[in-house]
Image: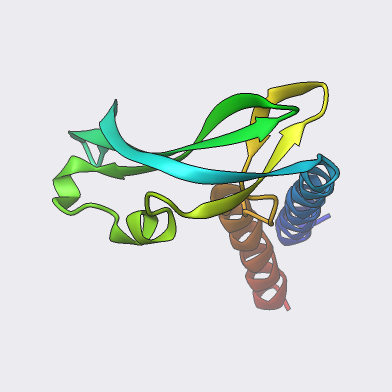
Length: 147
């Protein structure tokens, strides 16, 4: 079996696994009951230091703190976003998406109502998808070039 075929198979398999796992997670979270919630606060805090092209930079974690009630008991959760200080600008898109006072549909774990999510949509695993696409494309290119 040629290297191109192996790369093609690995690339396609990684895409199928990634998409399948994300769909199963989405379905599971959508099965959780929902409660009305609202964003109470936006905060920023220092995150981990990361290396990018040999330079170390500080990440900033943006968090929208939300609250919701289940059976009369108040709970809180947060949605997080990270960006690097070297970029020099805040992620305004995140701030616009989660302004203080915004109403949210919060899905919570029925076995542990303090565990919650505000998005049960399909969030891609960008890195895994990128690798799958790259391996698939490389496999196709190698197969075509061998002919």
